[in-house]
Image (cartoon, rainbow, N blue to C red; front, side):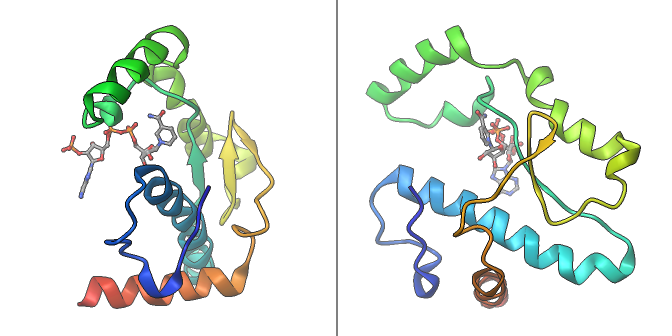
Length: 136
Ligand SMILES: NC(=O)c1ccc[n+]([C@@H]2O[C@H](COP(=O)([O-])OP(=O)(O)OC[C@H]3O[C@@H](n4cnc5c(N)ncnc54)[C@H](OP(=O)(O)O)[C@@H]3O)[C@@H](O)[C@H]2O)c1
């Protein structure tokens, strides 16, 4: 669903919440890849985690119609926060992942990246543009 325009990372004119969300998640993965390269020499590891669908406060700001539907689905199918935290915890404590970095995990396993998320050149562009935005 992501449609990242590198010249418009702030997405102020992008109306769809879903596109904005998808773009932000893709940029999380790309930015993490770029950060991992920079921290490698220091021995610091960084990874991305998809927690699954988790009952958190993330849905509190949805509009009324979407919110009612989401709240019903959340109650029925979503993980508890404790369950949703398991992949993060696994990454922090699993000895075999001590040197794992720049990867994407879900359900405590490394996952394949989409072509768009596995693009080093694009990751560097996202990194540069993000630094520009931060320093504005
Ligand atoms: N829940 C899911 O099903 C799900 C699925 C996939 C991915 N994720 C991802 O998991 C991450 C956490 O989401 P969540 O479900 O735990 O949502 P959440 O319950 O809404 O928690 C979001 C957290 O981010 C903090 N935060 C928000 N804006 C911030 C800002 N500008 N500066 C500093 N902190 C800020 C909030 O702080 P305050 O409490 O102080 O506002 C809150 O602690 C998000 O990146 C989300 O996209 C969630």
